[in-house]
Structures are given as structure tokens and as C-alpha cells.
Length: 288
Image (tube, rainbow, N blue to C red; front, side, top):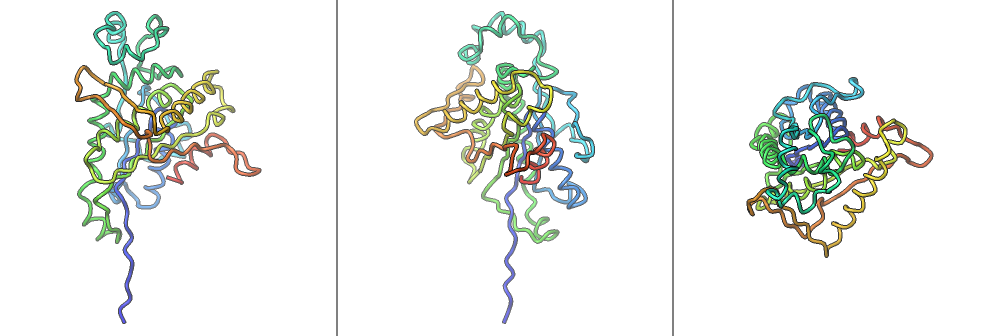
């Protein structure tokens, strides 16, 4: 009697890291993949995309990471000082931003080139200003995991599920970049994948108290609270998300769903054990 061996199956996956926390977690996932398969090219079912307002961000624990991210895997969502000044002086020309932009930032906003300064409005402003670049980078990341069915079956005995795509959006709700971008990014990923079969979008972020042990300023809890209130608001089926990212209606995103199919907020305690920020980043990476 022949023995039937059940094939392993996997869904192509795009990992998006937003801000410093996203960078930290994706660097650890990259290390885990390389430890298991030797080289990323040996496992082409996963692609990486880092989106950050700080071009010079470095992983805090070099031993936790592995090979560096390629330029094609990184998107610097910067806004130059000149662009900021022009937009602030002529905000009426950008009604899709003016309708939500905090007026108190208009007087004080400078270039966004070295982080969002823990200001959620700055992170969201950078997302709007870089919308098309981020869209293009995401589409390229999604394309990188396609067409590997024969390789994965021959090399690893893994059947690739071609009718789906997993997208993980990883970041912090407590800083400026992640807290300002993650919800919009979740909705935009859904929008960009519209018409494709069975995408699954998951958001993962540490709880704000994860940052209590390091000196990161006093906005951490306020940002985290505001972001979680927004997550709760948009998770209500009666709430419609509407945003427009340019003067074209082609860039209008309208959804009656939550930003993510699944949202995981990672706490700092498990029973009697309490985890450091570095341990939480590793925990998130291993769980993904």
C-alpha cells in the first residue's frame, strides 16, 4: 500500500517594517531566515520592505541582525525643508492633506529627514508626501515573491499557494513614524491588492509600555493611546475610512473594514516574566 505524504504549503509573504521598531524586527526575521536557509536567495518566498523617515537608522543590537538590507528593500520617506515650506505656505493647493493636518504643526514643521520626532502628524505627513514611492516599493516587494513555485517545490518540498499573499505590517504605535503611518498603510495595502485573490494583512506592534525602560521622551504613551483609539474606531464596522493621497480620485482609498485582518499588540509580561524591549523585538520576529 502506497504511503501518502502530505505536502507542506506556504503563502508568499511581504514583510513591511515601519520606523525604527519595524526595522529592528525585520532585521531579526532576516537573521532567522539566513540561519535556517543559509542565504535569502535560497528562500525567495519572503520579501522585505523598510519604510522610515530616518535614513541613518542603525539596528541597536548588531548581533541580533544579519545581512544588511538592500537599497531596493528600503524606502526613505523624507520631506525636504524646501518642500515643507512650499506646502505650508500653499496648503490650499493640497486639500487632501489640509483636511486633516494639525494647524499647530504648520508653524513649526521643518524638514522630515532624520525621523518624525515622535510626532504622529509628521509621520502621517511623510506618508502622504511619499505615497506613490511607497506604493511602487510595495508592488516591487510583492513581485519579488512571485514565480518561485517550481523552485520551492524542488528545493524544499514546499507547495506555494498562488491564490494568496500574506502581508505583515510591523512597527510601533508609540513613536512618530510608525504611529503616524501604520493605519494608513494597512488600508493602502488592502487598496493596492484589490482584485487579487485572498490577501491577508496583519498588523503587529508592541504596547507603549515596552518603551518605558529607555529614554525616548514623554510622547510615547500619548502616541500609543491615540493610535490604539484610532485602531478601535476603525475596527467598528460602522466606520468608513476615507483618505485621498493626491489631487486624483484614482488615489482615493475608501474602506469599510479595519486596517488589518488581524492586529496583534504585544505586551511586556507573560505571567511572572517581564520582557525587555530587545526581547520583545526578538519575540515578535520569531512569532512572525
